[in-house]
Length: 328
Image 1 (spheres, helix red, strand yellow):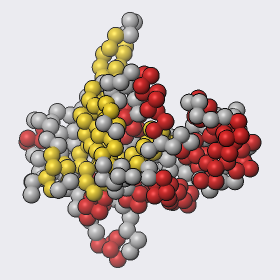
Image 2 (cartoon, helix red, strand yellow):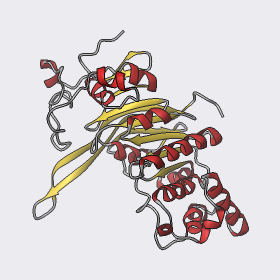
Image 3 (tube, one colour):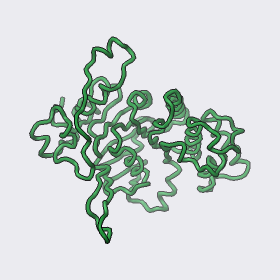
Image 4 (cartoon, one colour):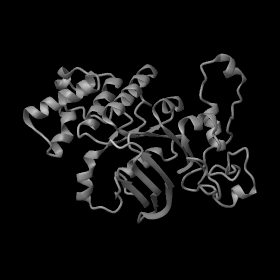
């Protein structure tokens, strides 16, 4: 595997959803779920995507995989622009790109056995059948730390953590190189979350996987990610290497998120300054003029309300969209 090669490049990606109303269902507005974001993910690495609920994280993952057709922008996977290819060409590429869904209770078909759930992608793409298929399903269950004798059991017979492992096994069935992890730990108990993150990390090292890891929990994101992107109201406001994000957050929103992450040392925890944001998140239907964060930003100045700040590289591999951050 060639390290440091860019596997996925996203350029000015936008996804707008129409709002319809009236007798004839005319469009009366749009939801700017993803509003012009750009980033790279290198092969074998993980980009952690964090932000509050409704900021567009999950829509970003689905738009990258073309489950939601982007409104505009480009998504390059292995130098192929996914937004420009046909459905048949996309179908051929799908085995290389998979998704682990947020809710293990609704993402598995309750009428299918575990064996059938994991085997389904292999059958649909005509990869294998018969004894070869049976052996592959058993191998995948072992890979995620489950008993291969569970193939005849059904989803309701498993815990949430076990169901998520089944979902991971299904995502791995076609030997993908890129996986979108859409908040895969948010619905799990805290003790199981760490096990799931450790499993994803082990699989990445073992199989050379590349992840887009979408989550709320910054401590878990730090554990798994190489770079972290902070998203707010459809835009990425800061992106940098994980240690730099925690040691030197530059955007006021990133600073508030980092200040909320608990520190295990009680003495340090008591002394540090918490940044509490006031007000509600604006609507993606009617975002504020200028910087999207200006309604809650404690550092906002006049220009913040006039035009959106440029998303730029202010330090080496440290990108920020904020007028108050100087380059250098």
